[in-house]
Length: 316
Ligand code: HSE
Image (cartoon, rainbow, N blue to C red):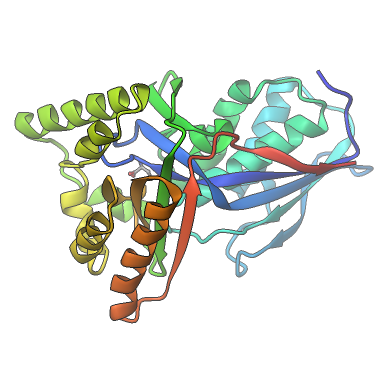
């Protein structure tokens, strides 16, 4: 346990969930964008949200209804904290409904900021269930493929979401991602409801093969195997309809040298995994050109796999 601080500002990164073949069980963190939460001691008892920026007035200020607030409150309850009051500021620096794990980043930042303010009584991994509770309060679903990597960084594999049995996978040093967010909103609920409730055995076999292949590829730094495994035969065929020019963007990214391409989380963001920064930039530009050709406003983020996850930006 560290010395408690007066005030702490933390940053929690965006994440790419599913990584094509790992629906609800695989995700990785990127360097930017991400959300920031400030936590400081207050003379007023209880937990209060005193500022929210960057949300266009969309987020609730009541702690019990706010993703970051719920995560922090759950953690405080678990620790039996009844001491001084705490103020929280939430600074949204990433879009909602983007497929970049926006609510997960807020929940992670909320729980982690309060944990740091208290002098880190819990390890990052121990913060996971509280951040999960925060995210679940936003979308009702319980899957750690955004929260896990936003908290811990790296590529996170979840064997079991209920038990939160998670593992950090090794990440080849030159693995990069181009992530492109087309500025349309896709509600996660809609993107989940669109999926069939049962899947033919043949597709399950293909998906399991690809997931195993991707994990082996990561462990062996085998970029070819990683590329062959970045395929989603379960969610992508249904969800691609929600993303304009999806197949053109995919073709463009692969032609630019990307190892593989799919939907980031529930979309509409898409990602290309690449060997090296230069190819990631070229893939990002190629996808950008496709969206620009239909006047679809978009943002391109190029990043190596972020191995840090949530971290303290400053503390006093
Ligand atoms: N695994 C989730 C999904 C990520 O694809 O619906 C979005 O929260």
